[in-house]
Length: 101
Image (cartoon, rainbow, N blue to C red; front, side):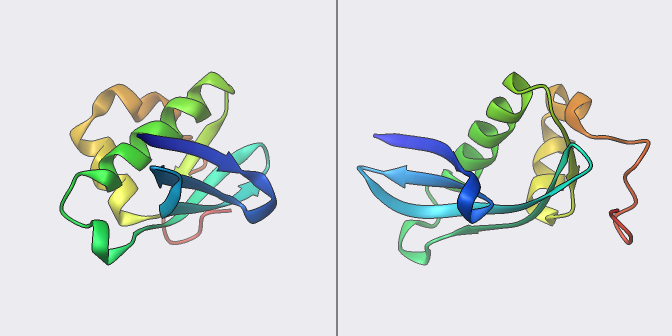
C-alpha cells in the first residue's frame, strides 16, 4: 500500500510503499508558503508512476491545510501544467522561479 505523509522535522513529504520510504519531496517554508524544491524516487521503484502519486498526495495535503506553494522543482511544475486543477495552489503573485523568495 502507498502512503504520502508530511514529515515536518525533515522538511519533506515522503512516499512509502508497504512501509518502506521510496521517495520524497523536499520543501522549505517561506512566509506561509511551501517552496517545493526537489522530488526524488528511489531508482528501484522508477517507472511505476510513484512520482506522480507522491506529488498528488503532497498537493492534496497542502490544499487541505489551506497553504500555497512555490513549485521550483521541475517535476512538480510539469505535474501542475498537466493537472491544472492544482494551479490554484500556486502563489502566482509571489512566484519567480529564478528568485523564489
